[in-house]
Amino acid sequence: MLELALVFLKIGLASYGGGWTIVGIIKTEVLGRNWLDEAAFADLVAIAQITPGPVALNTATMTGFRVHGFLGAVVATLAVVAVPLILAIVVGMLAKKHFAAGSRLSEALKSATLGLLAMTVWAFAPSMASAWYVPVLSVLAFCLSMFTKLNPVWIILGAGCMGALVFTFL
Image (cartoon, rainbow, N blue to C red):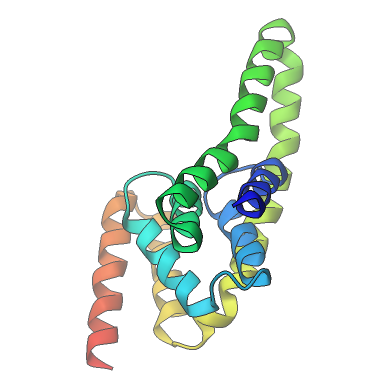
């Protein structure tokens, strides 16, 4: 249980940007400790995506649950949000005094977020490459979001339905 708490404290400390940037780091930690195998982690992330709330927080919670039950879920959830919550409070208090400097910090952190997001895409690329339709749906979803004013919710739902149809009939 202590190892679970320390791992998710480290993840909360080392990650900035939320969502998919943290999921890649969680995957590395969880698979490296043999808490889950790659297929179980992929299933866990899929469930985390459809569960209301942030995908990274849901992934941490469900990982804790799979490793140590209900108490593990509570510990992983609190551990992964503890450091970012404390940092947000401290930065918020400091930003009141130095508002202009806060925008430079925000710009610098965007670069780190982009790098972590790229790492997550790289980590999931091998499992995506096994099915031809995943890159096709990804490119289609990108084009729809980039070149139309279609609400992202409809793009996500449409891609999910198309993926389910392709998976069902192949």
